[in-house]
Length: 196
Image (tube, rainbow, N blue to C red; front, side, top):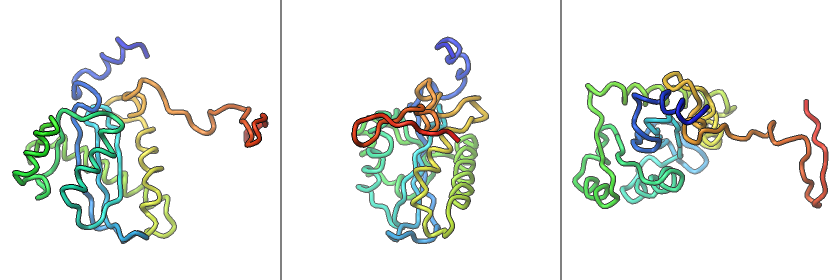
């Protein structure tokens, strides 16, 4: 897709990828092997790209900042604003100061801001459905977060008509099935991989 077409396709969404990120916590999952019972969900409001991380029941302010750096900043840079629900973690004056220091605005979703809430509910529903389909024992749910994230990011989103990967980078991710017929062996030589 030429850049001009891409701009036309995405007109009306948030202005740029990673300009506005939704951040939400989902709790109430069965404890995994590390006793984590929640997921932090980051959603880029333009590309619809998601990032997930398993979290313990109690997440401190310092841990939340580390999650933002590890899950958003290192991949996309600091968003202009982070939209969250009215979780007590984000309503304290402390958070306003932290985000001011980071050069990011912290916005709270409101009842009349249904697009943000609806988008999050859809992501949470898909997250739950995918985790259930991947796991034989639901206590293993956290092991499947990376594949769940990849699956969502490689699925066409109705509002953009493209995958979040494509919207974010104007290319599709390479998949194992696309890596080619010849794969180097561990000894440095070539080997042929059979396609099934």
